[in-house]
Length: 418
Ligand code: AMP
Ligand code: MG
Image (cartoon, rainbow, N blue to C red; front, side, top):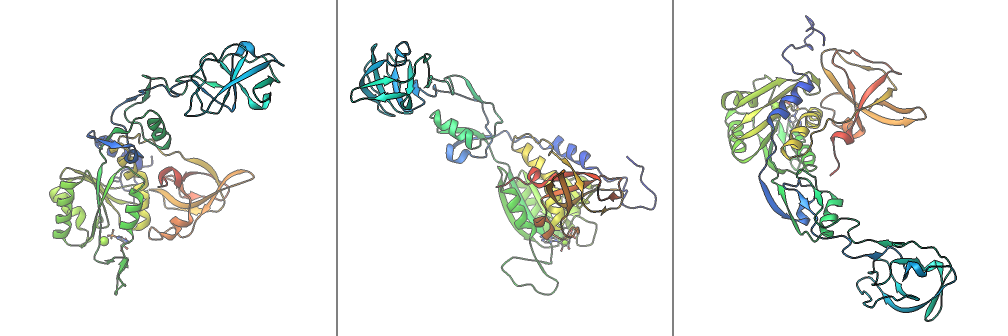
């Protein structure tokens, strides 16, 4: 890591690197261990609070994997004629016992009758009115049969605590007749925008005003996590209003996210209120976008004071809020995976901060290639829509040239789909 370069204010000796910030955040954001019982419908996306064991064998009985004929494997020689003595359909077992020289018509998912130990496909027999003739022989016992418990055996461990419940887990639990599970309580996340210039989306703009986009972005980002999002609206740039909102959030939430007001300007009250009544973790990050960022505590809640610029909001959320949310929710906050791509154009930066430029990642006949996607200003949110990845330019670098290999962080790694 280079020394702070005199005369170059991008090198701020007090600024934390992204890795340091991440480590500091993960150190304090402990998993919320309170649990609650939910139905299967409510369990999607949640985290199991306790291990789950299989209650029953699935399948509960040996069933046919095909439409065909259940028989004794010992009878299965080519050309043998077997008397057809019954039918076993799914949900309608045949309750007799198959004797030597006999077979039973069987459909997929139907219980294999007593006495039978193999199923021959219907395509491999010649069907008469009350008998079949085998066109194929040499069936081993168990042929085309799904054995009792061969998916899950009763009593076997299904899932450990901490397992995320996705579509497959919901299906497995349902197949076990498990109608509800104990999951971790969702972290409560309060969020608000700060700024006197902000107007809601349904109001026309007056002089000097802009629409409040950050709060909508945050709500959309939070929708991909198992959290209870609490929208506190827009808070004006006064110490009293910021203090009131933070006090309420510090009582109601596990995590607070604000946008704007974390620089050192006259209207930046978030930092002041946090310094006066909360605890400040750190202020400055050696990343771009996203330098002024506050992390700390207010009341009983962890606190993220994100910058006001919309691209900085998304980027700091992706890199720092995301791991905090995952860990609070009991998930692994594993590092997102980057890849290397060949750069298609020159990109410039000032040494001192790690740059997350908005890029368009594609493949050509040589593999991954990446170019800049639109304007790189931290206010140019449109470029986030045009981009699908960050081009990560190292802290000490002055950019990269066309043809260089660069590190790329695909958006799918940090912006999960809802
Ligand atoms: P601040 O950090 O409060 O000085 O804000 C930095 C920049 O982000 C300013 O140009 C703000 O107008 C803009 N900004 C702050 N909050 C929002 C918001 N909620 N939606 C859109 N832009 C915002
Ligand atoms: Mg502001």
